[in-house]
Length: 107
Length: 121
Image (cartoon, rainbow over all chains, first blue to last red; front, side, top):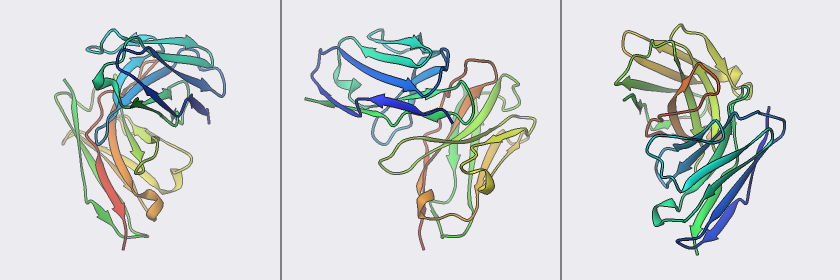
């Protein structure tokens, strides 16, 4: 199985901050990397697919980059509604696997 | 706009079989561009992909659960289902269904709202 490791596991930040979350794969996954946002009691919501492509309706302050084994999700200016848990997921090979999550909290 | 909705019993006894159904609306489950997945999340923990099914009935299961999982599809009802047998407390989780794409790269979108299944006597 491909292991996905996110860092940090938790992060405190303020509204307006620029935030970067990192996801590392245990082997090369090309650009087969997706990012999801999950709020308490809700299902995950797709933000970014294929490493850097925006899902329709996702604010432009979210961006993704990377290829191979190292990927980042950046939020350029945090808004109150962005405080949530973020997961990366590889779709390079089955079994599909997720990172352990990064919980973004208000400072 | 495809939407998914899970349904099933909220409580299952240890050693019994967990059964959940996902109803697809707004699109056909027989669309060859899609596959249909189950994903679970234990309380307070991360996400685990369980497996997927195509409309044809072809399946792929996570090897970690393969011996206990069956995913089936009913195209006449636009539904697919998950059965997990010999459950224990470790199978307590929110179970989500989600749509994926048969092309590559692919991703899960949309997801159902999820259904909490508790394994307890």
